[in-house]
Length: 356
Image (cartoon, rainbow, N blue to C red; front, side, top):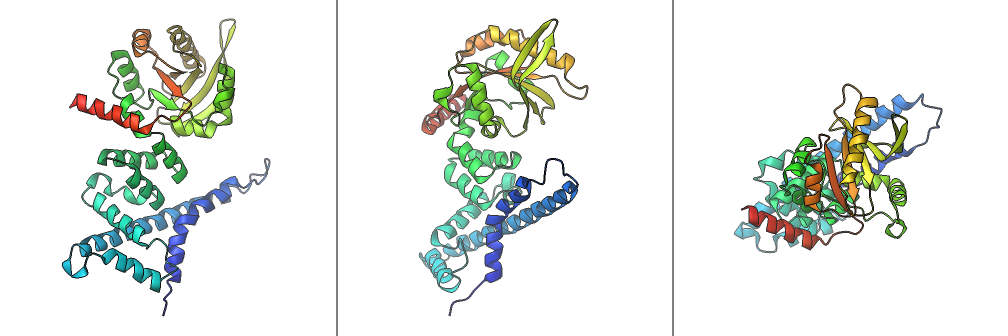
């Protein structure tokens, strides 16, 4: 006779569906001039968010406990080598509505427990991620350090599963680590001034590459894909405007893209270039940053930061160009196609081997 776990099944399904439910109120248009219900919406959204987090926490703890049970029992001779298969068959026959308790799912739970059981560094963070994000991190990471990196990134950036998949598939970990490997003094100073929040290389595969023939088209393509661009550069960025006008003397100048970074508490100006980095770009950026700090920056904010985004760069030229600048400025290159992850992994391994 088949048994049902109706309540438990519903409990498991909530973890998969509530994230979608969270978006419903956020996307509801209650009218441009009708905001009298905003406070109620905030109350509901806040309650739903707390409920989702609590349900997710219990789900992760349950998977961890099941993984522990299977791990320990599998080592006992009396249970035999087919223990996991027997458990999967039992749930399939007796609780067919219970999702995730297949042979593969049970092995993942055991792996989850065994990976983190002695890892005090991340053990307190595990319940802050969804199960689907944990599965991606476990299957896509090659080292303990990489797993820790993506766990912290997913929590800090509040990444959805789709966003996490994109970051991992683009080799975000390898690119971040390689960005910090540059030991040229001026570049290191710029990184330290911005708390290593900017990378040497950004992947913008979501842009319409064939249409990018000049800087204006480059800017337009970014604006059309702004959500993806912010995902790549970091979710602490808030967009202020494009072609942002600043006035110096009797002249008007226009900043390609202007953002505010919550973590740095400062404005960040992006200058877009479709060619190789040239030293004169730094002088222009210094002018932008000085104008922003004098005319736009609030007293409570930190000095503005500049990012010159180029198709390519020579690090020695960048080092010379930045060596005497006082404004925190980063020079980064962009790629319009995903970089071969195997190549990134080899480069990172070479760097680590040389350091050791």
